[in-house]
Image 1 (tube, rainbow, N blue to C red):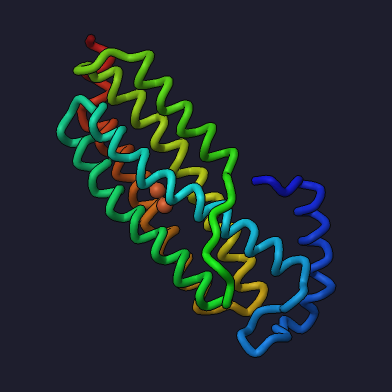
Image 2: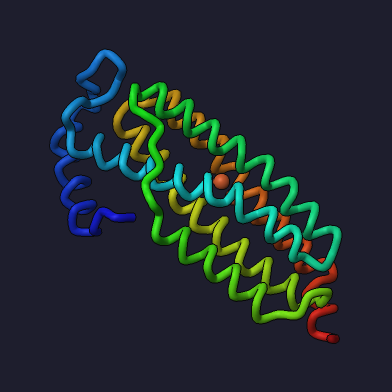
Length: 195
Ligand SMILES: [Fe+2]
Ligand SMILES: [Fe+2]
């Protein structure tokens, strides 16, 4: 998230005037040279970095988990996150942009937090699992917020196919968040409280 909110606000403000009539100017449907388009691509690079780092972080979280239920939830989402990376590569291709990762400070922070939770809790405890779920849900909510906004941007620019691809990822992030809540509420929180 290197772009400042001021720049973002400017890009969004500018887009509303650029986008009157909702007509993309390029043959690929992208508004070439538009500041909003550049901002959109920049944010795609940011979430691309985030997804690629999650692919590496989730197996560590799986290894740290106490319960097999949580471990398998992390394993499932590792595979799904690989699909999110591939989906973003398809999005870059559709936009005729290079798939480039740009460091996402927010995701770096969230993953550092997951590391400290692992350090601060004992292996083999349900408190560890409760903490891992907290960390993972923060990540999912970050992804949900990001994809939700990127879908609106894509629709606004007339990138229908791109918005559909991103919607599939968003649906999966929401399902993952719900699945984590179910694991937490089924037994982890209760057992963590009893430890
Ligand atoms: Fe993801
Ligand atoms: Fe996710």
